[in-house]
Length: 394
Image (cartoon, rainbow, N blue to C red):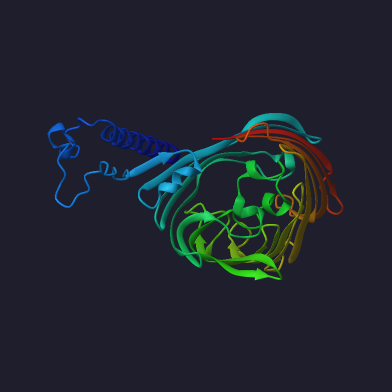
């Protein structure tokens, strides 16, 4: 029902946009339009109004009320009109591993609507998601409202948004769209849902440009947010209030250093309190070579008889080499504590992931991937994963 309502709403918005755009185009192109300026008829063409420059051309047409398109260029009109961009992406994959039969499936179908006018933004995103267990994580198959928020930007230093939005934590989670990432398989802490992908609440954020630091252009980004969740709100694992913050420093668009912190209660695991912190960074050493890392630590409330570890860690290091303009080779080494909630067991796992990525067109992403999972402790069985993913941005 929710998917149908969203679909109907998007269709109606598109139809209204087409009608408004058509009316504006006809008014601008048809000089005989009865709604046009009366001075445009032949009798008044040669008569100048008092104080009017007789050599001046016709008055400029007023800006359209609403501009609608698929390109980011549509936001150039956001100061004078309501600018709306519609888009999305889809991907499908072939997946296989040692423990399961192979699978061919559509993994994601995402549609979003982004409207802006001056300092205001309204963003809505819906997605069909089909995550399988081939990478060792839990299956997820659902249609849901990923994001729906309103944002007001006072200046670079301060913006406020309210609604449902991607959790501003670390590097991977805020980006969220797997089609934009280097690999098919997500990091361990994402696959095991150490914290929710979205928040339901409010955020204050901003950017500060202090100038040059040791001769390097700098940018400091910050975010503070609070929210909440319950089973009725379908907020991942969350019960009660949540709090978090993120701080990141960019240097000359080549270096990134960041730190994040987050607190929640996990209703699916005896309402335990979880405190998660992260350090992350990225370095573009060359136009073709990029290094990236994230380290997470989570402290969990320990109770009598509980099976989980009180403190767990996860880390990955990523090297990407763009050996051609539209092709790259990526290697990621991951290590961390992997919870099997069904078996009530925590294993230490080491994962090696190798990905060949090709971008034959600006809107097309192809990834061929292998990863090996080696469980050093616990009862989980080692396995290898192979995958081929094809995605399209529209």
